[in-house]
Image (cartoon, rainbow, N blue to C red; front, side, top):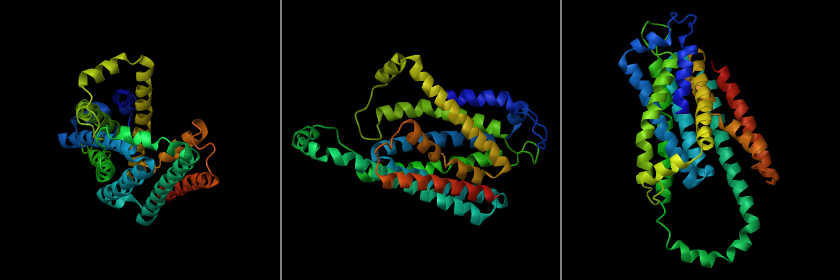
Length: 319
């Protein structure tokens, strides 16, 4: 809901402003007169992104960041940039600089994975001896637990998430293809993102019941009635966090889409996939997730930050 409302607000404000050098058209009625194929492309991008995001979250929950990040985010970064660059052709910029930046970003993703693995290992070592005494008792209760998904299933969820995540940006680029060059050729960035948000919203009503009834982690199904009751019982403050989070994400994604018109959709997408650098800064400075971590972990954090900065610089210079 936060994503859809934000996209609508920007569509009726900045989206209604004059596009300098872009035929001086507006979100309404210009975007509404674009061929249905373009609108369906943007709508489909939203649906695919929503499915991929859900799979990625479940993959992180089942496998942890150390495994899910390289498989999910890494696959999306490389494959998504390649597909988008292929669609754009010459507009994609300098191929050497672009994919050098993508390679550095992929290395940053893998280093992030290693950092989390070492951090988790260091956190478990002090309590290893105390936990060994309770292993016998825990083994008895494990027999009664619900069946766990196999490692192959967990890894496949992460890989599928990465592949799907790589597809939404090429569809979004296709929806905007021709905008500002030929009249009624492509959606404006604001129109494309509004259709994208509608796709996210509509698919949510199908995905939520599906994952509740058929959990991806092979857990116990949750009746829809129970989930609806818990959702309604949550205080407004809890719901507001979701709305604000969706709005913040929408602003960032829309800015990324608008920049694609001037930079290139391949470059803007690759830079957008460097967002984990900002998330890591939150973890370090606000949540203090790495307090007490070994020196090697902190050194790797600095390396990750440097790799992301280098990646962004290379990708920006590619255009």
